[in-house]
Length: 164
Image 1 (cartoon, one colour):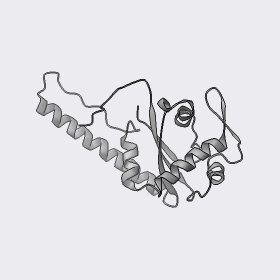
Image 2 (tube, helix red, strand yellow):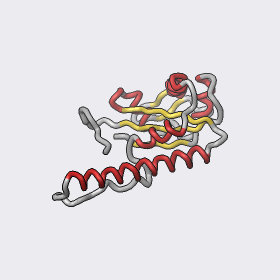
Image 3 (cartoon, one colour):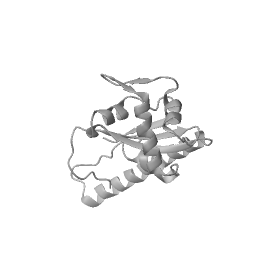
Image 4 (cartoon, one colour):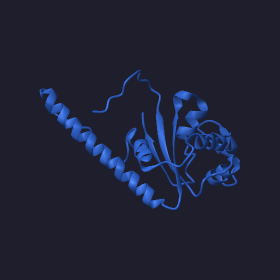
């Protein structure tokens, strides 16, 4: 059974699975892949230099050291809700703990199976590309909030998974 531990707030986070046409070797190359010739990206209430966004993404790529494997991609998808995820299970309020545990174990199994299927499909559809995973959270400030919410990967094949 999956549990969230710790303080729960109104903050959000998202995981991204992104397919690049090749391994980026510079910030400028990331910027070109993500934004083309656009020099600014529009957030909710202000603009951001695309080179600043590309610097962050390139830094995140360098920290990963190598492209994501299926296991990492599946893990990024499993962090939260994905399209086609099974409905949260229900059971009678008077169900015993063993019944509830069984229901949740089956849910977890189906949830993980769905994430694996999405990962496999994404990998197959992007077989000639290089895949990396990213995670951004609005609790880390205005810039990370923009990274999470303003569609920075729209010019590349990607998945965004809400991990609230």
